[in-house]
Image (cartoon, rainbow, N blue to C red; front, top):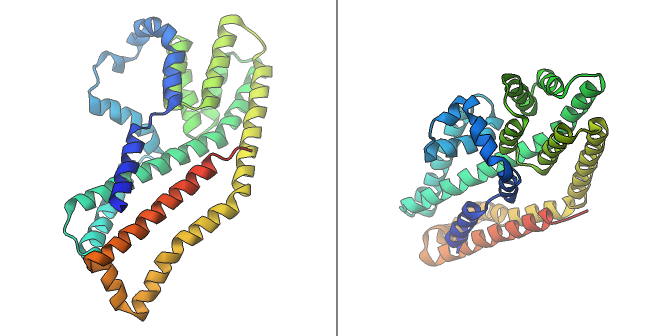
Length: 300
């Protein structure tokens, strides 16, 4: 039951495609012809990318959350996960099944990637309102939009600041704003950033009070962040209770190992006892997933 649950979970994660990316592609679909004609400014677009290159381009922004030395941290994580899975399967359970080791390592990789993606999302939510404040201040002072974007990139030393700096550099090279905004949305396919690009495009094409729109957008982002913190505070008791309940079997197993090791050996090495072990682990995993889905679906 445990391995069936792990396999189904991995299949679901692989089949899940972020709807924001799909909506983003549809949003910019009307200007694909113009963008393709202007892509000659970007030298990388002249080279056909293979599948692994596209995969690397999609995964690299998330891995950069670890910093410039992310290959080192990634290697340590993979080695540690493989060693832990090997020790658990071969020494603790006593099964010499390599596919189990690969399944656990794959699950750990997906879990770690989801953690980095969540952390990148939270960092964006915490820093993007500050970037908009600086942008609005620069626009209010009389700078043009290109100068304001470049000023944000020079002022902020974080991933969102580097993205604004890249946007400013591309605008200075003469790229069309639609092309620059599309590439930036590929890096940050979040509703807040997409709405920001829509605002910029509308201001460039038809004019308008950019300052007022940015001020309202900042208020919405701050209110959204406040509601998210309120939701986490309201669900903290349920989340902690679920974690405590999930930790009870593990704690009792460790305690039983000192009181009566024969029972633990029966669960780990006997074929009938291993059914109990897989049932407990599968139940724990499914229960935590249900709690996570319930907390994620809470709306304040």
